[in-house]
Amino acid sequence: MKIVIKIGSSVIYREEKIREDILKNLITQIVKLQDLGYKVFLVSSGAIALGANFYNFKNRPKKLSQLQSCAAVGQVLLMQLYNKLLSPFERISAQVLLTWDDFKCRKRFINAKNTLLELTKRKTLPIINENDTVSVEEIQFGDNDKLSALVACLVDATRLLIITDVEGLYVRGELVKEVKDINEDLLKYCKEKNYGMRVGGMKSKIEAAKLATEAGIKVDIVSFSKPEVILNTVTKDEILGTRFYPKIKLKSIKRWIAFGSVPCGKIFVDEGAKRALVERNSSLLLPGITKIEGDFKEKDVVEVLDTQGTCFAKGQVNFSAEFLKRNMKKKKLDKEVIHRDYLVIL
Picture 1 (cartoon, one colour):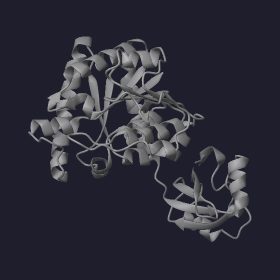
Picture 2 (cartoon, one colour):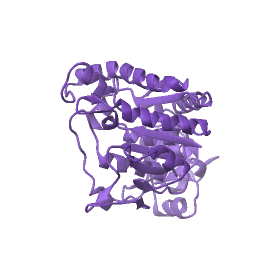
Picture 3 (cartoon, helix red, strand yellow):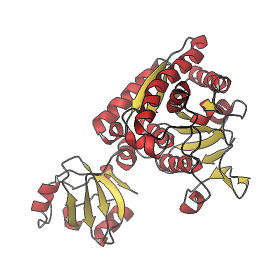
Picture 4 (cartoon, helix red, strand yellow):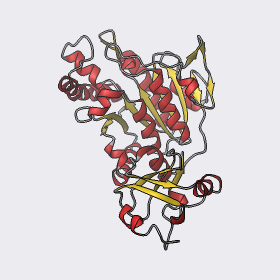
C-alpha cells in the first residue's frame, strides 16, 4: 500500500525553534510503516523556514531572491535533519525536488513516478518538496498541500495524511470528523493563515483533499500531537482528525489528465455530444464539435466545453487543432477525436 504523508512547516519549525523531538516521533512511526511493508512518500515543507532561521530572519522574507536563497540553504539543512533522524534505523532519505512542469509533461510525470517507486523498494524515504529556488508560483501562492495531493495521484497512493498543528477542520467550533462531499459551503469555513514562517492554512488543505478524493484517494487531516497518529490512522484506520472520503478511483492516465496536465486548447461541443459524453460514457466524435480554440497538437490535453462555455471535461486528443479545423465539415474520421479511455468528466 502506498501512503503519502505531508508535514507542514509549523510541525518542523515554530517560535524560532526547530521542533526536532516532534519530527523524531513522526519519523519513528514512518520507519515502522516501512517495516510493515508500506511504501511511504514524505512531502515536507520547512526548507524556507530553516533557511530563514539560518539567516536570522524573524519572519518569512517577502523579497523573491531572499525567499529563494532561504530555500536553497534550507533544503540542505532539512535533508541533514531527516538523515540525522533516520540514521539510528540505518535508513537514509532521498531528496526529490519537483516543479509543476514535472506534472504537466506526461513523460516527466512517468519518470518521476518510476524514480519514487524505485526508492521505496529500497526502504529509502523520498523527501519531496517544491523546487522553491526556481518555482516562483509555489513561493507566491501557497505551500505543499496541493503538491502532496498531486504526488498522491502521481504514485497511485491509497491514502494521503496531512499532518499539521491543528486537530482538523472545525465548523462553528466543532471538529468535523468525516466529510463525504467537499463543496463551496465547506470552504467558506476555511481561511488562509500566513504568519511567521508559515503560509497556507486550512483552506489549502481542504482544496488538496478535494483534488485527492476526486482521484479516489482517502485523506486525513490530523494533528502531530495525537499519540501514534500516523500508525493508528494507517494501520488501525482510526479517525483522529478530519477524514475525507474518496470518490471513484481513476486510472493513472485519467488522474494525470484531470489533475496533472495543463490544457493546450479548447474544444466546444453541442448538447448532443455533451449528453453522450456525460451520460453514456462515449468517446468524442467529430460531428459533435462546434468550435476549436488553441494550437494544440496530437496527444495534447484539451478542455471540452459546452454551449454555455462551461468546461465539463478534459481529454487527450488524437488530432492536432490544425487538422481538426481543416476537417470540421467531415462527418467522421478514422478514429475518435478523444477516446473515452482518455477523457475525464469533471
